[in-house]
Length: 180
View 1: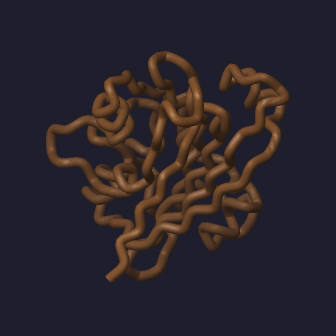
View 2: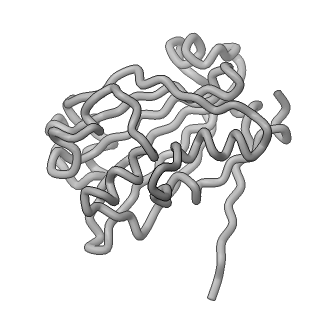
View 3: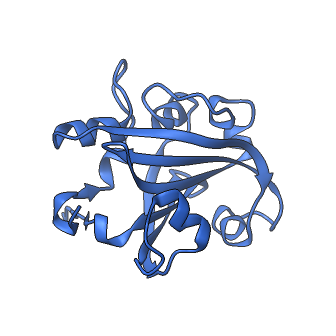
């Protein structure tokens, strides 16, 4: 797949879905005539990695909930995403379990009273590690994009941190900014 064949925007992943709708990834892929699925590889409490702890305003190693997902486009690995939540947000919720969440995590967060109003994203490029190459079915000399997204609520508290790894040659990220 060439870089121009898949274009992704962030907005659908930041907005709760309407009642009865599926997740944003499946909807975005379908709108482009593709099939988007995902597999939850892991979910539950883990010690917060240093970078995640800093973004969540926690101490390194403090427990957080993580959902690790492999995102597939037409059955081909497209992205590996780890989403971290503070325990106060996700403990004892569907976010801490491997079952698929109807409408997606952002919809569930909104139902739980956690609505994101500010998002910060940082994108870098790097070479993948061995595990990322294997999981993403990428060549070791193919660079990856690493996108880190922090979502804050109206009180400026972080409610989630996403860390995504995507084969760079299969992606094109689009940002639309409305001013005024």
